[in-house]
Length: 140
Image 1 (cartoon, rainbow, N blue to C red):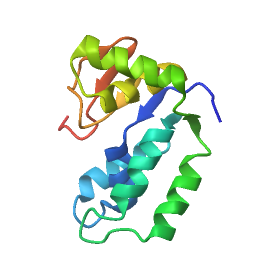
Image 2: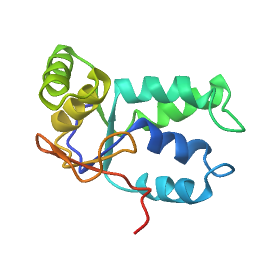
Image 3: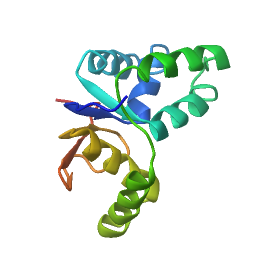
Image 4: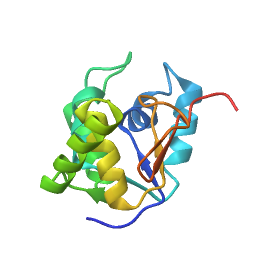
């Protein structure tokens, strides 16, 4: 489903929401809070989530549990990884000197119309194109 959204959630936010209650309770609480926003994600993020949720933390998810999370998350605003996202991801990675993977996440967020990308992986407070990165886990 492609729809517009207010914010875009990166993989790490979803990981903390799904399984951070034991190892990172404060991050888990904040991530769960972000799931109540009008958020979007992408095929790349859901694939990364599925793989990493089965191997991170002290209590990784089973394949079935990770698959259920992916199914539920895919019902939100969702940007498939198509040629336009790939091309824009390459352009972002070159322009901002970041990895292609981060560039593709920015490209997907832009395609969904998100103004905020919640992520731990990119520089907090920087704006890439029309998307501002915020680390939701920094102390306020």
